[in-house]
Length: 72
Image 1 (cartoon, rainbow, N blue to C red):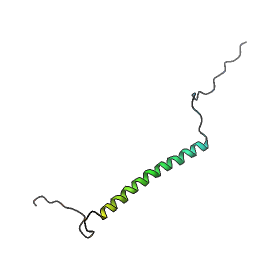
Image 2 (image 1 turned 180 degrees about the vertical axis):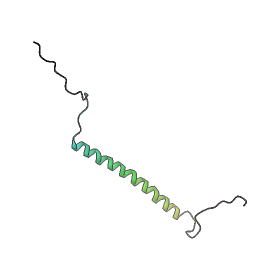
Image 3 (image 1 turned 180 degrees about the horizontal axis):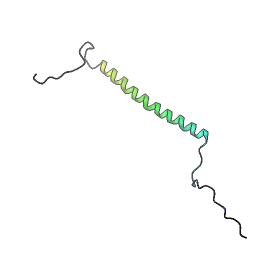
Image 4 (image 1 turned 120 degrees about the horizontal axis):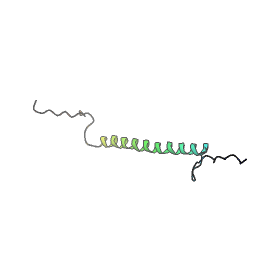
């Protein structure tokens, strides 16, 4: 009687490894840092636009909305 066939271990690939909890936590912190960088840059653009609006030469008391009428 021959020995039963043995099944191979699950094929995870040659270069694959399972991520540990620490690896996942570090990846989450890195992602949060990158997202925070994007949010900070967007906020700086908004602030730059606001500061530019202060110094564009238009008095703050003028009507900010420009209405175009075409011969009516």
